[in-house]
Every structure is written in C-alpha cells, then in structure tokens.
Length: 119
Image 1 (cartoon, helix red, strand yellow):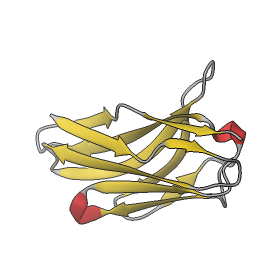
Image 2 (cartoon, one colour):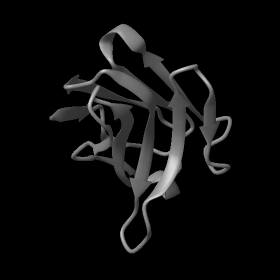
Image 3 (cartoon, rainbow, N blue to C red):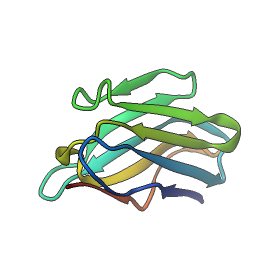
Image 4 (cartoon, rainbow, N blue to C red):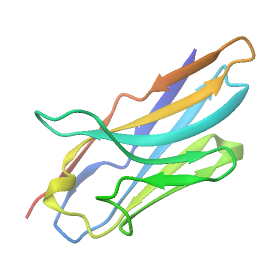
C-alpha cells in the first residue's frame, strides 16, 4: 500500500501564490516519477507538471514560467510552487506517483486538494 498526502491548497486572489506538497509513504522501493494533475469542473484531468527520479521536468504550456515542480527525494515528497495564479488555474489538484514496490510497478493518486483563484 502506498499513501499520498497532499496539502497546501486554498483560496487565493489572482496574481497570488500557493505551494502544494505531496508526501508519499508505504511500500515504495523506487519512484520513477511524481507529478501534479488538475481537474476543473466539467473538464478532463490534465497534467500540470511532472518530475522524474533523474530530475527531468515537464510542464503544461499553460503553466510554463509560472509553476515550478521540485522534489525532496529522501522525504519522498514533491512540491508545486504556483505563482501568478489565474482564475483558470482553479481546479482540484491531484498528486500522482509512478513507482515500484520491489514486487511490481504501480501508480498511486492522492485524494486531491482544491485550489481556487478568485477575487
């Protein structure tokens, strides 16, 4: 079993900043990548940012230059620093982990954290 605990969501005004955290625990032998996805009402879940075990990152075009993903490997924690937030960034943000338990590869999702950008 692998658990992902997200935190840091909330209500912020346009132009503001938030920092999301996602801590992983449980039967994790190796992490291939961790990432953040988001889902707005009536829309499909989409990739926001992803970071591999080697530190390679990729971002959605809509957040490039505003969001930064980082990772603390010893703590199995990934962060998403979100700056210059816009109303269209409003969504539930989910953490995703792709890894190996020493028995099999797996994918785990967090429970989601709400981010609302509104004046």
